Length: 321
Ligand code: GDP
Ligand code: MG
Image (cartoon, rainbow, N blue to C red; front, side):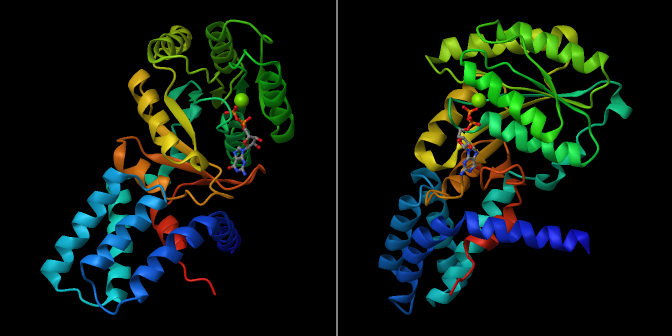
């Protein structure tokens, strides 16, 4: 029963978070679909425009339109109502192709089984929501009884260290910092060491988001990774790239830069609430081999959801009166 309420709460939150995207995207698509009774070239053109305007991205849009054209030709879909179902199905299928284990996030290996903490390194440019996502994720892990340590690896801004500390106090996580202007590699090293020695289940290391150029980014991230690997071979076990969905195509460009600079294993898309650009989740899911694992739907500590492609598409297509 508790689970039921939790699920309902999450669905409501997701529906609220996607409201602007739904209004923008689907109001357009709805118009394209209802203006005409049957599917023809102009309906598909309008659909294409609507997808691009919702920040799905050109490549992904072309792929969706191509698939729909095929289905319409093959299965003789003719009414626009059927097209609505078809579109929904194709979008869901496309996201799922890249998300074989979307719901397994919290099945990360336990310390009890591996004998060491699970180490997560969080990367992304300034302001996308890294620190906030670390706070929210820690809160969920702590709710599940895990012992979490945060490492303050964004040492370039004074506020960044304080902000992470505040989150650690709010959610009851451990906190490791060497202060501002210290070497992020050294912070990562010490945080992982403390994680190993103090019996932490999960260590999450924050990093600075300075994106001067690809070479610089690559060097900096490699250095931090190597420091962790020195203490605990194999760490970090996960590199979580945080992207701000409200920046639309910019988020895609950042995903490109970071996936080229370092091995990224998971994506989080934040700030889906309050943006009409939620279609970017579809583009990102399609264009990167890296699965979207989390979406941010608000600033509070409960506002991080494990990304569920089916629930996402269902919410996007929900008809609201
Ligand atoms: P960082 O520079 O990448 O560490 O970004 P921060 O974690 O400091 O976040 C920047 C701003 O974005 C803060 O004001 C956060 O409260 C806000 N933020 C982060 N995630 C979300 C989200 O999912 N929704 C909303 N509305 N705001 C968010
Ligand atoms: Mg930060």
